[in-house]
Length: 626
Image (cartoon, rainbow, N blue to C red):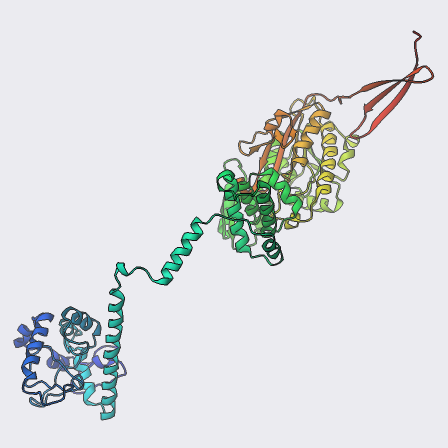
């Protein structure tokens, strides 16, 4: 590009204004720069030019009354900068008949002309041909758009000029109509009031705010059950929860609390897809406001967390290596020295070279807590009764620095394959793997310093991982799990050596939040074995229940810890830590004396032998004569 300075060659006109401007610099300067004598006229303001144009219009109207009002040619030549007015043919009249010279063409800046015309309220739009800004709109070489339009007008054919006139008239008419509509809208005063639509919207909004919630009739409930509107259901849930918070003041007359609770239960089951049994248990467990938070938290997956394997690396080095691979992570929290939380990753977090080399283990945050509560020491004998898939076992091995012995047991042989693979990958060398039923374990081997029991459970704390738990659990499943947990817990307690110099501890944990699988089981163990609850050593988490509905539990259950998804952003978990103070098994004996017809006295002795096995012995004693 660049400007060509040869004034003899005439540039071929391009399609746009920019191309038309690029002519010879000397020609442009000589042709378009204003003369020195025109400086005074150029200094006139826009209003001054309009007033001059009005005066000339008034003087021109007297001798031309016999002509049509549409055509108003102006006699004489106006000084440069004065405002010209044009009628029907004014804007297209490019030459003055009297002088034979060009007149300035209409400016392209229509917006500023419209503003000036609104201030004067006299001169119509499209009638002003010049403005203050038009005189200043020149390029670097003094060429303005008006002069270019004049040259272009010289080359137009008659039909093209007629079409241009029509366009100008239509544009002027459109501007006038748009301004009239704008003025009509502005003339609406506050006294006229808002429109009907605004009144309707305002009245509707007022009704929504003021109208109290009313339970829908039975017919509407059945219709909602067939084709539920989730937005309406969610709004109704919020309304009912708000009413139940202040039931005395906001309840509907003639409605009981049970009716609102039943409606809320059905809506929650519909909105979150829960079964009636599990939802009823959760409503007994949580307050209503906390219940909704718990259900919402179960709809969101928990953050991906990993545990650094300190047998092979340090957390700082591992974090730097993963960051270099495009992983966005942070330390898990102040309570963990090895955990990392992963926000997002550009590589598969379970297939990095660091993972394959055993530098870390993918493990949930709640699964680290039982090992921290157990606090295994070096050179101890540890039993992990339900070890699969090996996350807690490997964590204990790294805390023990591969010293001592860990016996990793699991009743499922298929799950032991993952345990073997993880222990080999992580470099664990102090672990022995066994395949036994945990209930028979005291007969196999005992005398452990510490025991970890992650008992099988209903999984109500990990609904975000397994949404099927919402509907496939019932009362029998909970009781079946609770019975198995009681048997495993007594076997685990019997496997602990109470005389251990460094240990004698047992940690019982489940990934369930049901009271039947947690506090009831712990209460049962406290009655059947010589153990007591001790603090877990975890500085966060909610205390265990000492009373639940009609049940009353041992006060030491305050030492147990509960973790919830909506409060701690980790899977639901329960952790209790026992200290065994005696290896003897307390025996509860009850003697019943019965009188027999033959004069003998039958003494019935019942003794608790194992978990649920009783031995009954009947001794016949001769009756002493009176």
